[in-house]
Amino acid sequence: MIEKDDVDRKWKLSEKTRMNISLPSDIANWLDDNASLTWKLDKAARSKQVTKILMEAKEKSEKEY
Image (cartoon, rainbow, N blue to C red):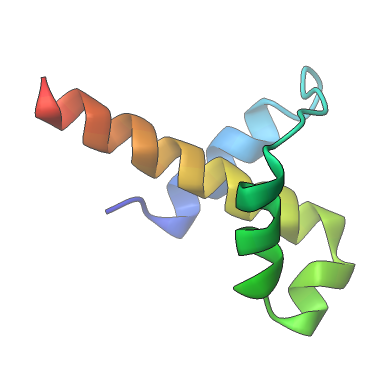
């Protein structure tokens, strides 16, 4: 399980080199549907949540191999 501190650290370290990414519409819609109203309005929180999801996906894929 990815810890909040790990996500915050990764997110802050990448702040200067962060780039905007495009997500497939089904993933973007899922994120919106599963987000609280305050999260939808806070772009930093949204970015951190996407970072967490990507870190969890990477961790899971590494465990499978």
